[in-house]
Image 1 (cartoon, rainbow, N blue to C red):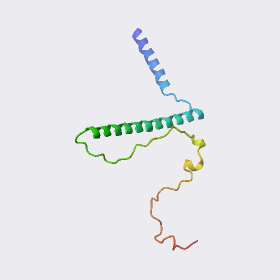
Image 2 (spheres, one colour):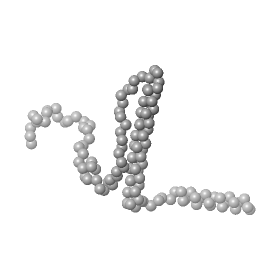
Image 3 (cartoon, rainbow, N blue to C red):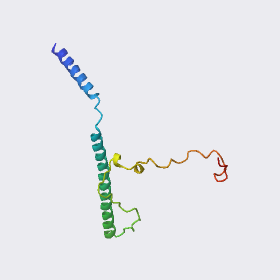
Amino acid sequence: MKQTFRSTLLALCTGCLCSMALAKLPAPTPEAAAKAAEAAAKTAWSGKVDNYKLCQAQDRVAAHYRKTAKDAKPAVPSSACTDPGPFAYTPPADKPIEASGAHSPPGTASSPPSTTTPAASAPKS
């Protein structure tokens, strides 16, 4: 009797936990979505700052190695470390239309033009 009660209780608890795990969360509010977008932008910026600091540290280590090693080869020119600058975030709603890409030119042509005559010599309609 105890074994049956335990297994029934375990099955009931497992079913409740599974149903809670499958429940959907409500859609985030616009304020929460804006905060999440700003947090994502700040995370991306901090990644750029980390890469910049790593680049500077690698340059210092390489310079020290070239200075102290007897058989060090000369440095190969490479791109300089780029400073990402201070964090600045502009919400998408505050961006001007031009910055949103609304007036961007269309993509590259995927097929050749339908005629072989140049546009300058084509009849005007």
